Structures are given as structure tokens and as C-alpha cells.
Amino acid sequence: KAGVTQTPRYLIKTRGQQVTLSCSPISGHRSVSWYQQTPGQGLQFLFEYFSETQRNKGNFPGRFSGRQFSNSRSEMNVSTLELGDSALYLCASSLQAHSYEQYFGPGTRLTVT
Amino acid sequence: DQQVKQNSPSLSVQEGRISILNCDYTNSMFDYFLWYKKYPAEGPTFLISISSIKDKNEDGRFTVFLNKSAKHLSLHIVPSQPGDSAVYFCAASARGNAGNMLTFGGGTRLMVKP
Image 1 (tube, rainbow over the protein chains, first blue to last red):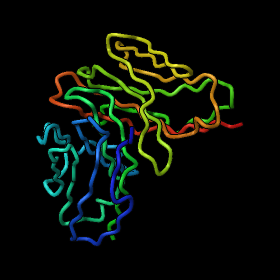
Image 2 (image 1 turned 90 degrees about the horizontal axis):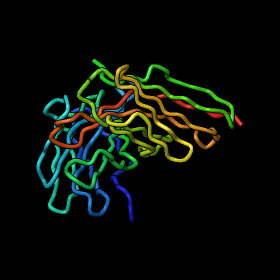
Image 3 (image 1 turned 30 degrees about the vertical axis):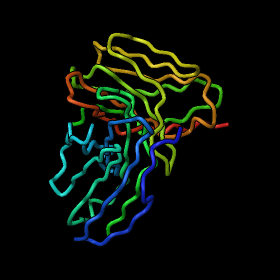
């Protein structure tokens, strides 16, 4: 069974631009979560979607948004990029509504210049 | 306010010996704990987990111990192998969460020397 896939793997953007990252969960998984990893803050929860509904949101500004499609694929969008948004963005999928184990993709490395 | 802490940023052990990675938490609502391993340029890989109703869970070379009164858990790797060299993250999930949300510690870099 294929794992979680994320596209693109690497991205370079300029301050003020916006970016959209994509995640395809493991087949059959309906929950998709997004995390941001930075050297200073570690791994931080962004938001989680289940059946196209956002169920949880972390402590991030409104510039960070996401959505989930009917096939469980998810996208996250960051508008008005700032230098501090440079990070590894990780997507994780879970089988059920309350599955503790999450399976992570390889991440998208975003660099903002 | 860090709810999950891994106080040792790095740990070095000899091949064949035991590796012990520690994790402390403050939120008494956490009821499930997980360990993930992460190699550079890859996403975290799930290793082992434990529910708060247990105090030990074992899977091959990996054992996780939970001490609820001390709000402390540890991961034991026996015997350690060079391929175990990676960053290890402790994560926790809280009862009553509307969904699947993990709170991670800062990670411990394990280096296993041949």
C-alpha cells in the first residue's frame, strides 16, 4: 500500500507570495493532519481534517488555511508569506476519526526569501 | 508552554548497549503516547505507542514505559544498532480531543556508534 505523498517536495518562494501544498493520504485513510517543523519550535500541529471538515486547529495565524476534498486529499495554503514560514511542512494520515497513530509523508521543504 | 518535553537533545551509545530516551509531560489529559523516529529528509516513522491504562508496551527491541504519577515515559532500545541513529520524538494525544492531534516533544538525536 502506498504511503502518504506530498507535493512538491521542495519550494522556494518570496516574502508576500502565497503557496499551496498538497497531500495524498494512505488509501482508505480519512483523516489528514498538517504539522510544521522548524528548528526553533519543533513539530507543531497546524490543523486536521476529517470528511472534508476541519476538526482541530493549532495556534497559527489565519494566513494558514487548508481544505480536504471528497477523496480525502488535502491542501494547505499559506498567504502573505513571511521569512519565519520557512519550515518543513508535514502531512499525516489516520484511518479513522479517532486513531492515535498517524502516518507521515516525507514533507515539503518551504524556503521563503 | 511546552506540554511535552524531551530534555536531552542528544544521546550517544555504543552498538549493542541499551539506549534510553526520556520524555516528560505536563497535561494530565494526555491518555495516549507515541514514539516516532525521524531520518533527515524523511517524515517521522511511527515506532511504538502506549495507552495510559498500561505501564509497559514491548515490540521487539523497543519497549516503552509509562509512569503516570511522574508524568514520565521512556523508550528503551535493546540492543542498539547503528541503523537506530536518528531523531526520536515523543508525542501525546489528549482524551476528549475532537480529532487526531498530536503534541510533540522537541526530539532527541540518538547516535549509535559501531
